Length: 499
Image (cartoon, rainbow, N blue to C red; front, side, top):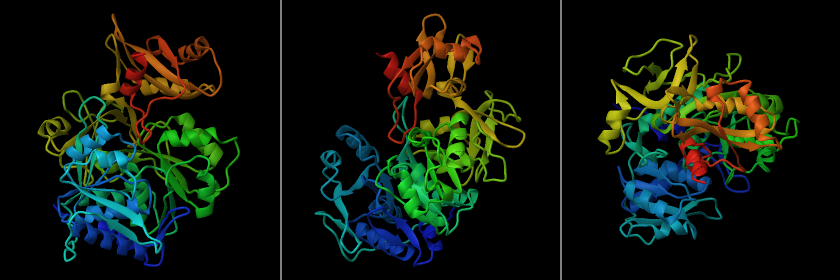
């Protein structure tokens, strides 16, 4: 099977139109972006890199990170890594990806450099005073080498799953998977050349790469890429660059709400919509976002193995339904029963997907493939239910369900009840070991204002069946998260129950 490529996604923007803007830094038109990607791909090829070779990218959000992601995907396979990793983490990921080269900013990335295997080329990247990307390396090069355009079946990107309960799995995403995803996202939100996306997600993660960057470039719009998310500068940046939308995890939305005093901030008036993905958005947070920022909030559902988006709430005037992740977009969604049968509407089971953006399999992991695929369907590991209109509500991760003496409890239901209390800023429920019941309900909460624990539990008891009410409540300053802001309940449980 063949298909589109990431390179073709760049063809839609007019040469002189703005493609990429770094506040206080470089600005690239579509013509300049295409030229720089081509030159960077050839430069990587001159260092002996080619089809199938994995290029580790340890770069902050920047013009360099976008250009080099595309260039690495053209010449071989991009393998972006979190710049905040420690040396041992870099050692694992560089070995697991079998990287042939490591690209870091000039003079930076010390932990990654120390972890670099001897046979891997080290390449330094910088933007010169002419705005040109420069790649420098002591590795031997051949200036006669160039690269050919990739094909749809070529692996463009490799990323790791989160790996909370086992070794992270390596996810190979083909050009055709990513091209289908960019088309899907751009179509879902009717993105066009007039749109300006404010990218606040890290570009070592599928959410930022596909939703914020590639879908925007596919539509001929402009991507604004600050070096990092900063709630202090978010609205001034949105105002200056006339942002029409942004996509983020709920943590970022909540941080923006915490700094808001109830007024609509400058810059929000141009937003067509606000997108939320990669973690569950509570209906209360959705309501506050819409009330204060004055734009429709569209919760979406994505995962790395599907090249990000699988479902989304639609733009107005169609219904956006709090507590759901909307309807399927670009993939087919089903609900699987315990016996492996597809279930009818309004029945709870495992969410399964299939479609052009979904991976063919994990990298060199037949055991994981056998567990993940059933008769052409990919098993997401999420539990959910489809209603008669095709809206998908997620109940929780199958592995995160709380089993209290045989009673299966969805922790998200408890989260949403606790979040209804005005004193609660964040809430995460999880299973805590219990000698008689197997598991008991516990929850961690971050407070916005002081409240007695018994008062909060009484609030929950009025709204939940007794067996769902937390028996243990942890009042914490912050809740542990992944580098992309995602909450992993097992990590929270381990961090708190070990104390």
